[in-house]
Length: 269
Image 1 (cartoon, rainbow, N blue to C red):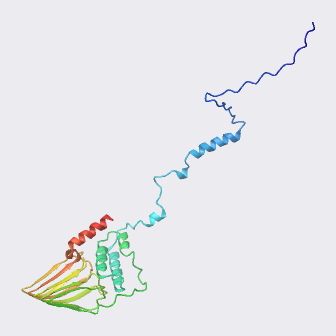
Image 2 (tube, rainbow, N blue to C red; image 1 turned 30 degrees about the horizontal axis):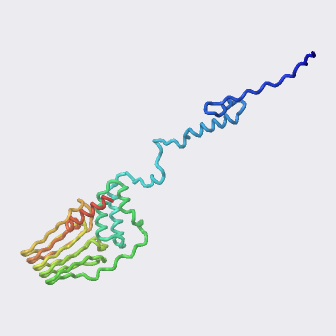
Image 3 (cartoon, rainbow, N blue to C red; image 1 turned 90 degrees about the horizontal axis):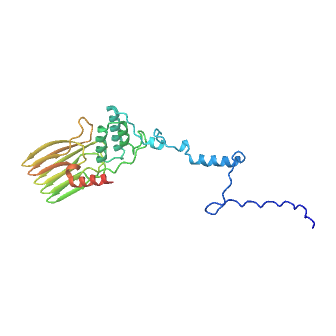
């Protein structure tokens, strides 16, 4: 019997790849030294997760320009600066930009201002000195207001260039000066009340100068005292009361309930 020759070697069968417990193949390790692109990709991913320095907020970061522009001047105001603002308000009133009430309120606020920023807010909506003047309100043509056994209520919104007169004979007269324009800053009123009542409503903070006589009548002033030494608008009243009443009140004493409700509503907004 002949012997068979040597058989050629057969390649050993390849070993099946190892599998993970979940059934998927185990990824082969990657050598970062032989795969630089993979190493750079990993570094880039890690860098993207780290916040950049420019994105990190800093506590000492300065306010933006828009916020810095709203910061008012904290420097304390001087007496000369307050007087300059009061003069600017007077000019604005002459030009017809401010009513008697607005002139009085802003004048009082100017004298009570502490800083330059407070003064800037008072004149923020007014043009600079020397700007073309606005058209003033029409002149107040009616100067005499009377009530004989009746009532007369007038709210003056025109420009007062001269004295006014109020006469009440067994009636009631009410004059409201808050909406008027007073270029000179002074109002002169001659009042006569015979068995009647006359009521004059003025803005808060004005100065009242009351003169005249009364016989079995009453003359009263119920206004808040202005800032001491302030150059505020003036209302001069020459009153004669014969068995009648003459009363001068400001907005605070004219409608205290309405004023309280208005203030409460403004505070809520």
